[in-house]
Image (cartoon, rainbow, N blue to C red; front, side, top):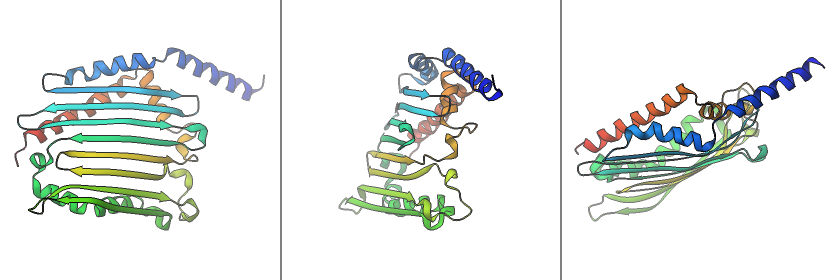
Length: 259
């Protein structure tokens, strides 16, 4: 048997052993229930559920998670749903991701009407400037379009609601000479969002670059993250719990804030 053949067989045995020891999706979600349990009480309800955790020896194939968080304060409440977070490799033909966000809270109580007005009036430019600044190294290859609509004001001129649509795409044929296509993970995305005095609703659709280096063996990416979750990696679980603790502290402070 050749050395290469031995390496292939060895890798297959290792991968099969790892998969055999992996937790099932149901077992992972039982672990997640235990992680969020300390945050659940009379005023707070938290849920974290994975819907897909699928990877082969080379890459992540499917990933899905739904997250919800609700907390009741003295005179305001926050309800967050970050669901339909989905990723599908689609055999490398058209890798894509998507997510939906819903935040229900009285934004005027949380931030004050002047802040809400400022957010609404600057929303389009802020989003466009953020994306353009983030992708500055791509030069003319990056195109960004942001437009606002459905602006509604009260009789006093305060913003009651506004919508935004943000589209961005990278034309690989126009990339600067010092930027390789393999360094780019996202090739295009579309964000549609609505902001009103009672919260925010948004939907994101992302097109992933099939040639992104993160898909290559040896690069840390979603595949490795999935492997850590299903192998019950304690540091990964601790990281998830720490993120929840930070979010819980931030929202608690927000509900206690007086404007």
